[in-house]
Image 1 (tube, rainbow, N blue to C red):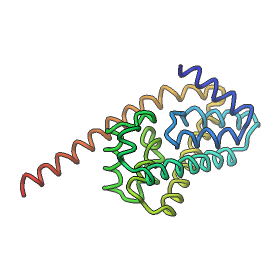
Image 2: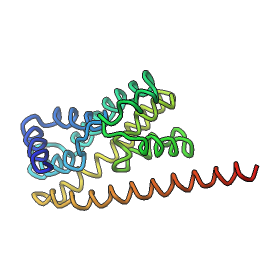
Image 3: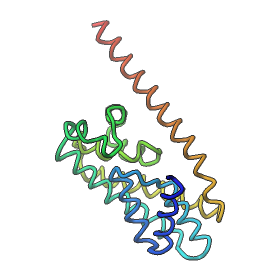
Length: 202
């Protein structure tokens, strides 16, 4: 299935260039499971072939993430947590994702909108949580774009350096995804333990 998805993504990027990057990265940020780890490295491969510009490809990735994140933010702000708890499974968002997002915003505030864009897994659903938390729109938009732009630059650069071996990144990112999920789960459990101890002490 992943091979079929990758073929569909790469064929569309090859055909539509920057527009495809903007649309696909936006879909990923709107909670649709489109792997940016395929989209942007392939754009880097096209840069290596002289078919795309390095800076414009990264910029397209950043703007794509922004429009998708704003849509996700609006859904969270408009319909709130009950909507996500009821229908989140259709966007591959479960209670664990909500808890991880809550933990990040509770600890890091607005900076979460920037930091989360640099993390696989978390970056896909964090805008929905930002909407639920009703974080201010302007700093959310600016920080989301900057984080997404940096992430896009990184992936385009890796694809450029690897050339026709760009697909070798996928197993690496899969392992990184697992590590992020494990670390987030450990952090959330530590957060619960700390608050349980505080409540027990009081």
